[in-house]
Length: 105
Image (cartoon, rainbow, N blue to C red; front, side, top):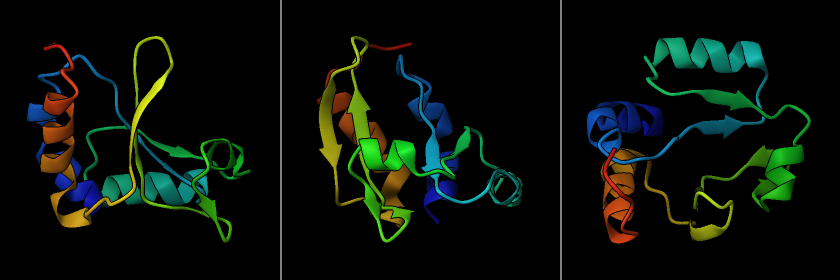
């Protein structure tokens, strides 16, 4: 549901000067199949060794928790959204980008 919500908001997200992706602790093969099945319009990264998830503090029980982490061009985390709603993830992302004053593309 979250993947589809982001996919469906892709044009609005691309109106901002951002890069975005999902990350999962699943294998590359599983993530590739998932992306194809859900017609993802963005990358889904495979963090099979969980190093990225652990570094960002989102690892729980071997899996990455749903979080939106906003990082500015200098690499500084400016916001962490820990109440991601899969059904509204795309619209919520657009709202957050507007609220953060992210420049247009």
